[in-house]
Every structure is written in C-alpha cells, then in structure tokens.
Length: 212
Ligand code: HEC
Ligand code: HEC
Image (cartoon, rainbow, N blue to C red; front, top):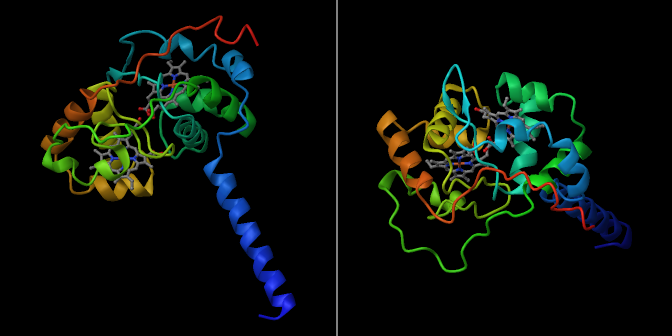
C-alpha cells in the first residue's frame, strides 16, 4: 500500500470505529441526576405497581432493571413515531437526545446482567430463535436487546402483536414475529414473564443520588 492509500485507509477505519462506538454508546454520557428530575412525571405511571394502560387495557411496562441503551432506543422510537402510543409520544416528543440519555442513565442504572453460566431452564420450542438475543432467562444478551424476564405477560403479548401488525416498526423483531401464531405469542409471553431475576416496577428513589 502506498503511504497516501494507507493513510486514507487508516482514516476510513478510524471514522468507521468512531461511528460504531458512537452507536454502541448511544446512552452513554447520560447524567442520572438530571435524569431523575426529568423522569419525575414518568413515575406517575411507571412507579405504580400494577398500573394499567386503558383502551386497550394492558399493564404499563416495568422499567426497573431494563438496559439503559434499550430505554433510550424506546424513547427515540416514541419520539419519531416508530412506536405508536399517544401518551408516550407526548412525553417523548419534546425530549432532546441528551435528555433521553439522562433519563436512560437514571432509569437503567441498575440493569440486570446476563448470567455468566447459562440458566438450566428449558425454553419452549417457539423460543429457540429468541434466545440468541433475549437469552434463555430473558435477560437481553446485549444492552440493545431488551430484557423480558419478569415483564408483565399482557405487555409482552401486546408488544409481540404490535410488531406483527406493524404498529411497532422495528425491522429485526418484524422478521421474527411473522411465524408466530396467537398460541405461540401466549406461550412466549408466559415463559419470559415468569423468568427470574425479574424486571421490577420503578421505585421512587428520591434520595438515590442526593449524596453526590
Ligand atoms: C400516563 C402513563 C405514562 C406516563 C406518564 C409515562 N409512561 Fe412510559 N409507558 C406507558 C405505557 C402504557 C407504555 C407502553 C406503551 C406501548 O405499548 O408501547 C410505556 C412505555 C414506556 C417505555 C418502553 C418500555 C419497553 O419495555 O419497551 C419506556 C422506556 C417508557 N415508557 C419511559 C417513560 C418515560 C421516560 C416517561 C416520562 C418522560 C414515561 N414513560 C411516562 C405509560 C406512561
Ligand atoms: C436478533 C436479535 C433478536 C431476536 C432473535 C429476537 N429479538 Fe426480540 N427484540 C430485539 C430488539 C433489538 C428489540 C427492540 C426493538 C425495538 O426497538 O422495538 C426486541 C424487542 C422485543 C420485545 C419488546 C420488549 C419491550 O420491552 O417492549 C419482545 C416482547 C421481544 N423482542 C420478544 C422476542 C421473541 C418472543 C423472540 C423470538 C420469537 C425475539 N424477540 C427474537 C432483538 C431480537
């Protein structure tokens, strides 16, 4: 390789790596203290045990233990309309990328970690394709993959139906739900919803960051 070619190549590689790192760390740089203030109104729904969405009725998702990166992705999805939900769109519409990172750093601060030794549970046959990303125990193997363990079963069903109907426009999940029938959706939601360690309803931890 001539020197200019090599320089151009090294530059392209560096630019590529910087881009890749930027994507992987999209929720990095969030400030959990600012996030706690910004998330105050969110707790009115997400910190209430057993709280339900109405029309249609299904449980408000648990966020405690969820990956910060996924929380940020979800909020950007509501902001852009890739995920359809009136109230969540209203809450996300005015958030900047920095505010989303701050909220994700606060809510996702105690994310459940994937187990070092694979759990012994035997997932149902329909979950064979899911475990590569969501784990046998429902803990997302990468921060971009949501943890499903212990999530409300009715919410998981709703999510899978929305990928199927196109109300949620994630191309990865759209591909995986096409082959699922209503019985598979029920089986998968029940399986992942019963895994432990479990996601939890957010606690109102008013003093969590006050010492900093
Ligand atoms: C009025 C009740 C309500 C309020 C207030 C609210 N949410 Fe939500 N949130 C919901 C419901 C219901 C869903 C599920 C929507 C769906 O079906 O996609 C949801 C979904 C989410 C999700 C996606 C979870 C997942 O597993 O995909 C995140 C993240 C989230 N909310 C964060 C927030 C944040 C941050 C705020 C405040 C800025 C907030 N919510 C305010 C009711 C609420
Ligand atoms: C290649 C990786 C991959 C595979 C395989 C996969 N998923 Fe996902 N899954 C994702 C990603 C990425 C998301 C987040 C998509 C988004 O932003 O809406 C997701 C989201 C979900 C959600 C929504 C979670 C929430 O909190 O809203 C459910 C439920 C889910 N997947 C179940 C499954 C099931 C069941 C299977 C097997 C049939 C499966 N997934 C296969 C990557 C995967």
